[in-house]
Every structure is written in C-alpha cells, then in structure tokens.
Image (cartoon, rainbow, N blue to C red; front, side, top):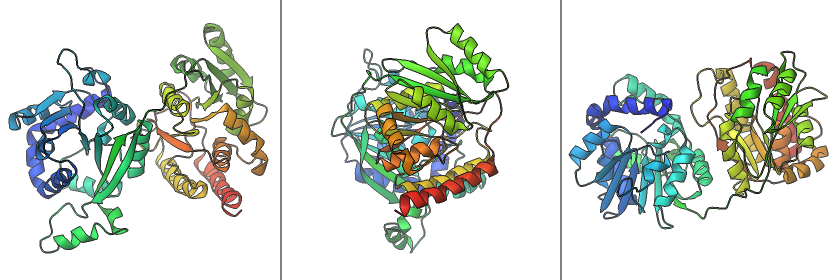
Amino acid sequence: MQLSQFKEAVRDHFERFAAERRRWKAKGRFYHDQQARYFRFLVPAGKRVLELGCGTGELLAAVEPAYGVGVDFSEAMLAEARAAFPHLAFASGDAEDPATWLDHEGKGVKGPFDYVILSDALGHFEDIQACLENLRPLCTAETRLIVGYYNFVWEPVLKLSERLGLKMPQRLANWLSPADIENLLHLADFEAVKRDRRMLLPLRVPLLQPVLDFLAGLPLVRKLCLCNYTVARMKRREAVDNRKSVTVLIPCKNEKGNIEPAVLRTPDMGSHTEIIFVDGHSVDGTPEEIERVMAAHPERDIKFLVQDGKGKGDAVRKGFAAAEGDILMILDADLTVPPEDLPKFFRAIAAGKGEFINGTRLVYPMEDEAMRFLNLLGNKFFSLAFTWLLNQRLKDTLCGTKVITRENYLRLVDGRAYFGDFDPFGDFDLLFGASKLNLKILELPIRYRARTYGETQISRFRHGWLLLQMCAFAMRKLKFV
C-alpha cells in the first residue's frame, strides 16, 4: 500500500501508540463508554457495519454487528483488534484509495453496509471529500453514515490534557465544525438527516452527572459539548456536464518561476481548457517567460494579456472579459492552491452543487509558513463578518480560487453598477455580485501550500484596512437597503 508523506506520518503515529492504545482508553474510560453507548443507540445490534479508522476495534465490537468490518492503515492497531475480536473482520487499507474498496477475487471490503461509522477519524484524512466519495458504492439509499467529531472549541483543553498525560497524544488534525462536515458531505453527495451534540464534560462527576447530562441538551449550552454527531444518507448524484468548457485565469505579477508549473500542473477539464495569463506589469521577466511557455507548449490553449490598470481586481475583469470558456476559474499564480485541485471545482459547479464555488483554506492544516498568524486571524474575523453580511456561510473570503459560470458572470457584470468599481482584490466584486444575484455559494476545502517562488504581495495592515472599509461598504449596500 503506497502512502503519501502525510499518510505515512499519520500511520507511523498510530503504529507508535498501538500497544498503549487500550491503556490510554482506560484513562479516558468515561469518554469512550459514553461514545459506545451513543453509537449503540444509533446502530441497532445485528446490522452490517463498516468503521473507518477503527483502531483497536472496541467501538465496532460495541455495536454488535452481524457483519462488522473495520478499516485502518495501522497494521499494529489492526493486530490488536484481530486478537481481541476474532469474530470481526479487519482490513488494512487507505480509505481515500478506491482500490481499497474493490472486491478482487474475494479481496477487499465487500458492501453494502447498513451503517458506516467515522468516529473521531475524519480529521486524519488527507482528502476528506475523496474518502466520502469512495463510500458511495458501499451504501444503499437506506445506509446511514455516522460522523462523530470533536467540537473545535475544546482544542486548547485537549492539547493541555495531552501535555498532562491525561490523553493520548495526537497529530495535528483537521478541526472541522459541524458546518464543515455537512459541506463535505454535500460535496460527496450525502445529506445530513440528523445532528446532535453530547458530553458537556468527558469526566464523570459523581452526584452531578444527571444535571450535566440535562444541561448538555439545552439549546445554548449544548454548543459547548465536546462531541458533535452528524447522521447522513446518500442522495442521488447529479451528473457532471463534461460538455462545458473551462477558462483558467491566472493573474500574475513577478511570478516568473511559477508560470511553467502552472501550465504543466493545470489539468484538462470538460470539453476544452483555456489558460489566460494576465500580467500586472512584472519586472522579473514574467512576460517573457509566459511567451516562452506558450511557444514550448503549443498543445495548450494559452492566451497572454497585460492589464491596463493595477491590482488583481483589474486583472480578473480584463481576463474574464476575454474568456471563452463556459466555466470561469481564478487560479493565483503563487500556486499555494494546487492546480491539481481544480477538477474538484469543475465537478462541483458542472454538477450543479453550487453556482459560485469559493475555495477555503481554513479546513485542512496548512503547510508551515503557508499563512502567517496575523493573516490567519484576519481571515477568520472577515469570515464571520462576511457570513453575516452576505447571509451565506463563508469560512474563507480571501482564498483566490473562485469559480462561476460565464453566464452568471455576465449577469454579475450587468448588475455591477449597483456596487461600482470598489474592489482592488477582485474577490469581493465577485462575492457581493453572487450574493446580490442570490446564487448558491458553495465552499470547497483545499490544502493550502507554502509558496515556492517569489514573495507574498499582501500587506497585512494596508490590505486589512481596505477590508474593513469593504465591510462598511457591504453593510451599506447589502444590509441597509
């Protein structure tokens, strides 16, 4: 089983703690007993059950399946599980690899299942959307997918518990809110049918436990519970319209070293893929490099424009005016959003899951130095602000990768006079226009990479002040109407 560097690190971590896993569970007995109790409530005995990230197998055994399969890629964890629960099946595999689920001459995991469990596991996957999509062949319309995950407000407490030796150490995981999980389920063509929050404290408090259990169910207090649960079902998958053509717009300024990688790494999508570079008066040889790459790769449909004004917003407007694709995409030339992720955006909009697809960098952990701390805080603040302003959830307003159909973009252009020429970034012209048109805005999580060439062109304080000004502008234009 060939694993990526990320997955090898996850596997090695759990391999290291496999022999101690039951000792750590004994330390957190109340937490694990409560988890098992709730899953037994959700999953009747005698069903066909699959658990991903099964570890040493206690939870799978607790729901008493007639046919139970646990999947993990830690062989050491699976060895412990097989020894303790020989009546259950345990398979080594990568949940994100479709080969894990293929039944070759009796090998592989064989479905369908009545229930699929992911308990505290989702955050350890490298590509959560791919993992969820791979589950579809193992499900029927009656299958229920149960996702249990930590409440992210508990992160400081859990980290402190690890340092004090009260909890097994964990690698940096994806801290997913219930809304993040539902969004990922939607992208994989599952829909939430039930949501729950439980466990106000992961420790038993004698005499007060009934009171704590009661408080955990109250409307406001329950938001402080440690455990979030989402129960989902598979929905009908909408067909991807591969007849659509695509334009990938790449605004660039002093990005010479990223030009050829951008071309080589941008996949072909739909019926045809057009790439448009719009240069912002570079002084490092970027225009000459674009012309060289165009000559070196005649098999790609590449166009080169020089913007008239300044700023990314001006470049986006000029590039989209020249675009011929049915679907318009923006890819930042720093390649911190991997071009290899663009087909996910194509499938999301070509299948009608959303009408404006906005990338979000704030779900998966970032590479070191990918985003400075103050930038991260600013992004989270403006996420809350613009979610309120637009009345649609936005976790990351400033991710450069945004996708809209050409038809809807032309509608946006027709209504641009309402907002005027206010946006030097290009992000908010599109976001505000999409909101004004009542388009369904869908966020698509991506892994944000560190820049490998050049320097960031974002000024935290100057651009932060501009963003505050745009919040005030949006409030006037969108709230006080």
